Length: 116
Image (spheres, rainbow, N blue to C red):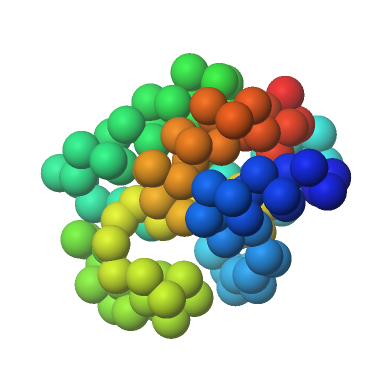
């Protein structure tokens, strides 16, 4: 990630630090294809918006439904320090929620994170 991305990310309040994820929750794809993981619920409008934004960019998302698997909400909270959904990771990098994802898109940084 370039220095300008980190600077803009910090300016926007987005946590661009690398977080480790359990390998059981992520299947690494080739380096040209982004590995996107999203903790979500079925009724969350922000989750729906995040999924729409990413799929419109042609990205496949691995969703973890914390409403169907409550034990994974605890896992999400431990990893992210946040209790709200969505919580989005791109290539094992914690992006944050929908507002953070959208801010990266508006700033022109999302496409480079997605390798598109």
